[in-house]
Structures are given as structure tokens and as C-alpha cells.
Amino acid sequence: MSQRMQGQPMVILGEDSQRMQDKDAQSHNISAARAVAESVRSTLGPKGMDKMLVSSMGDVTVTNDGVTILREMDIDNPTAEMIVEVAETQEDEAGDGTTSAVSIAGELLKNAEDLLEQDIHPTVIIKGFDMAAKEARSQVDDIAEEVSVEDTEVLKQVAETAMTGKGAEQNKDLLGQLIVDAVENVTVEAEDGSSVVDLEFLNITTEASGTAAESELIEGVLLKEDPVHEDMPTEAEDADILLMDTALEIEETSADAQLSVDDPSQLQQFVEQEEQQLKEMVETIADAGVDVVFCQKNIDDMVQHLLAKEGILAVKRAKKSDIEFMREVVDANIVSDLDSLSDEDLGFGDITYDADNEWFVVEGDNSHGVTLLLRGSTDHVVDELERGVNDALDVVAAAVTDGLVLAGGGAVEVELARRLRDYADSVSGREQLAVEAFADSLELIPRVLAENAGLDSIDTLVELRAAHEDGEQNAGLNVFTGDVEDTYEAGVVETAHAKSQALSSAAEAANLVLKIDDIIAAGDLSTSGGDEEGGPGGAGGMGGMGGGMGGMM
Image (cartoon, one colour):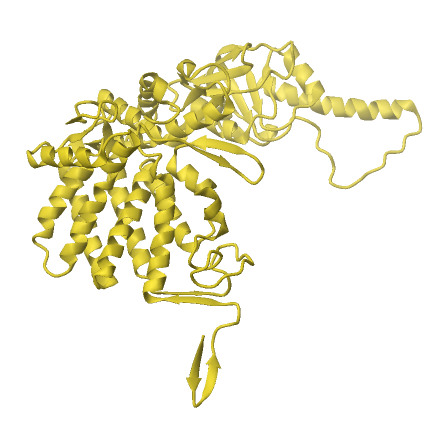
């Protein structure tokens, strides 16, 4: 960039820098954002397809989870990364609806581009989108149905809807019930009478053996460990449990030391002194009435032998996360120093051992913590199953916390679009066009659901609009039959929180992109700063998606 001043050029940017302004910048940003949105669109709904993602290390991920796809993609464009943040925010805040949020953001930008071509200023479009998003969120609350933790059937339908189209779909009836039971186990009542779901007290353990139909809910902790000594007991009822995060062995000195002995008796005395220290450790544990020891670090071989003689079960090198979770289940303190051990530090519970699978199950008295054991035939299957179950857990928890659910299958989007068009009539100025564009963007969801199911998207949308004009606000698409029906009654239920969050995230992302009218890059416009040649508009410069996205599309 240069500017003539008194006949001499004024150089402001470096030789390798690039700049794009006004409509060129807007077009570039919109194209990049839409490319991201379109990359995940085919995964939407029960009939959505999966993506195979291969990392640079050769690791393979097969999934149709929107946020997982976008995180794994090698995206090399700053604008595209802004859209990825929409998915990550949606996942963090709502747990599901990532593909919907990103798709709506892309459609908003597509419709905004049409308005820009009509010489409507970006700030007008941004204001209209803000007005539409605010109105849509208020209408979501008006459309939503109330639900509580006691409405187990509706909550199960919420879980099944979240899992449909993912690896969990074939066994969604069983898994849906397990998820509802798990959420009920970790739900507590707050002082104001509201329900609070403590998902941190819910562990998910996966096992690449068997089928998803063999998954189960364990009211306690599942510990994939063995007893440290074959002569130890493997089960205990009403056991006093000690949790430790330090090793049961002689501590090594921090400084190197050399021992000189004059005769073998001195060496024997040294060894006996070490043995005495180890015996004292075991005596302290036994005198405290401990039945079971779970240690985060190592247990000396001699300590193992002595504990076995005392009839005390011990497990070494347990995961820190398992020890901390067990603390809540058995109501124990984690002990770092045996000299300070007291009765108050011990937990209380039942221990059982599954020899076939080689794991312990630790259950506490009125345990608040539970473990969801998921099984699948292969690692890829069980990984996708876990992603689906995690989404379902999040949305069921949100439904219990917020107490609001909606009809799925595109029903809420068509109803919101209808109400937004009515609202647009009350908006003066050019913002009215942006509100109408927002309404049109929402109808992308039922259109894509129909396309992914092999149905005619135009005919489907016409039928949906007609049903909603007749007052059927829960009319959505049954992707398996192609019929328009009351999806709430059919058991296709989503959370109001996820829908509101998707509207907010999509609108904010679109507005952020639209507000940019100037791009200045120190070099090639990519997050990795590659050395590809090409200026604005070139495949390696600002005009393309960069090398990273090109390989994934």
C-alpha cells in the first residue's frame, strides 16, 4: 500500500503484506464462513452422513458430530476459524445443536450477501439480525413446553432425539433410559427449589467389547485395576476404605548417599530397619480398621505381602481422577500422610470384583456418583457412541435445569420463521429486509433435513409452512416417512436452551463477519502463515480458503 504525498510515495505496509477492502473483503469472509457451514451440513439429522477425518498422524475419526468434525479439520483461514468458534460455544453452553448453529450462521451470511448486493449497508443488516435474534429467542420461550425431573418419559425422548443419527441410534431406547437414570442420580435440589444437575459426579467408561445393548449404569465407581497380591480378598461388604495419593514405600532421599559396612550384620541391620518401617505402615493401616486401600501411586512388594496377611485388599496406581471421584462416592478424605490417619478420613462402601473383565465396582452408601459403562464392538464405534451419549447427557441436564423443551424435526424453525415474518411487518426501515432474511435462514434446517433424507426440500417446506399457517406449531418433518406430523407427540423433542443458544451464536457470528470491511495481513492470509504465492483473489492468498480447508472439503 502506498500513498502519494508531495509527489513521493509513502510506503505503509511491508512488501509481503496483503490488503483487501470493502466488497472484496466482505465477499471473501462470507465465502470462507459459508464453506465451513456447508462442510458439516450433510451430517444434520437422523439421516445425516458421517465424515471420516484422518489426522496428520494417521489417526482416524468417523463421526457426524459437528463440533468434532470442525475441531479435527485442518482449517487455515481466520474467518473460517471464527465460525468454528460458534460450534465450540454451542457445545460448551448447550451440549448439542452445533451443526444447526453453524448451518444457520452460514445461511445468514448467504442471505446477507444478497442484501449487500442491493446496496443495503452492513450496519443495517446487523441491526436487523440483532432484532430478529432477540425476537426469535423470546418466541422460543413462548413456544416451549415445561418439563421437570419427574417427567422421565419426555426426558428420555430428549435423550433419544440427541442420539438419533449417531452411533447410539440402534440402542437408543436402552441408552436413553440409562441416561435419564444417570441424570436423576446426580440431580440435587437447590435452596430455591430448582433442580441442579451435577454432571461432574457422572463418569463415563468405555469398553471395546460386546455391543451397545450391553451398556449399563453402575451406581458407584468402576475401577479397571487388579488386586496387588493374589492372596488378597477381592470383595468386601460394609468396608472401611482408605484413599491415598502417596506411595506406600520407603521414600528415596533427594541426595545421593553411599553406605559403608564393616561386616554383613550391619547390612542386615540396615535391611531390617527398612522392613520395620514398612511393617509400621501396615500396622497403622490395620489398627485404623481399614478393609480396602486404593493408592494413587506404588505399593512396595513387602507392604503388599503384609497387607495380604492382614486380609486387606489393596490396589495400586489408581488414576487420580478415579481416586477423586471415589472420594465423593464413599465419602472419604484423600490421605497423604499415614501418621495423621484418623477414623474421619475413612470412607464406607461395598467392593465387588468382576474377574472376567478385571475391574472393581465400588459403591457407597446412598452414593451421589454413578458410572455409565458404554460398550461397542470396536474403538471407532465406542468413541462415536460416547460422543452421542455425552450430547444426550448435556441436553437432558439442560432440560432438567431450564425446564423447557420444544418439538424437533424442524418444527420450531418453521414456526419461528412464520412469527418473524409477522414481526417484520412492524419493523420500519430497511431492517425489515434483514428480519425477513433471518426468517428465511431458519428454514434452512427443515430443508437440509429433507435433503439428507432424500426428500424434496421445496415440497417439504411448502407442506410445513401450510401446517403452521393452520396453527399447528409442532408440525415437523418425519424424515423416515416423509410425512409432516406433530413431532412433539411423536417423541422428537429438543431443549429450548440449545435452540436459543444456536440462534444467539449464529447471529453474533454472522454479525461479526459482516462488520469487517478491511483485511490487512502481514503475509499470506492464513493462520499458519504459509509461504504459498498468490495475492488477493488467488488460490493461495485471500481469495481462497487456504491450503487447510481445501483438503477437507
